[in-house]
Image (tube, rainbow, N blue to C red; front, top):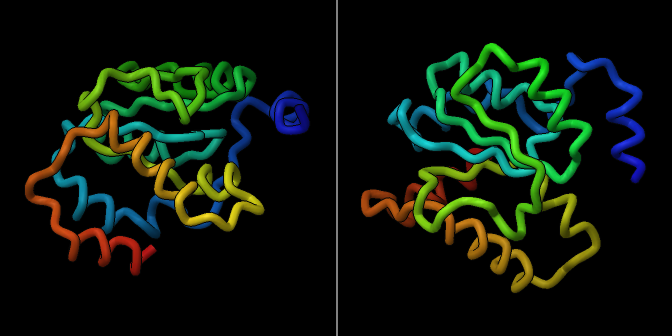
Length: 153
């Protein structure tokens, strides 16, 4: 795969963040994920620094999943001192977590990569449903909060 070739060429500590950096979205993460003990899953983590930044900000329970075994192995090495963070090779369409075992799933570009060229809104909704299966429901999360988050991003 092309992405595997790129990851193999890069230094272990190379990183790339699509869209926004943690500093740019930190206020939103802190608002919508107020508990630093929340279990967070980074969908399609790649070699982004977002997981590391979350960890350094006090969110220690970060599970990272990506289909690239090359990037997962590199990220394990680079972040080996972050002992509570996990790295999993897997398919985000079939998350390897127990139902309702996750507090928050974060995607910063994976859905766009998966759905490039797909115009059907139902496919996007299917993705959200698959992720929701693993996430714990939040009784205090309102539709207004979700709209606000989407507008801010």
